[in-house]
Length: 84
View: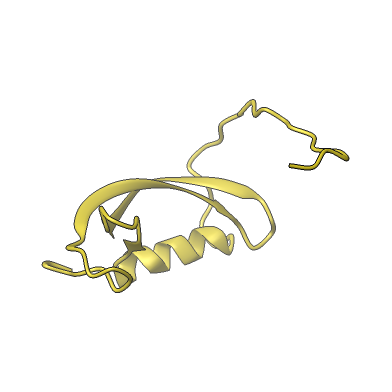
């Protein structure tokens, strides 16, 4: 993936190690750390090698067991009948 250009905007892609927050096939949110990717500095598009994509698929389909768990406290907002 050396010298790769973004297929969305044409900018030169940069190698980065990213963290992903995804939802598994079972509907569970997961955090995937240390993911090698080519990332567009202009639009944020991410491209993964075939090996990385296969690992991500194994994680999201439940074929790979998690390395650990974390507990997060998240803020909750209710919109109700409010508009705008």
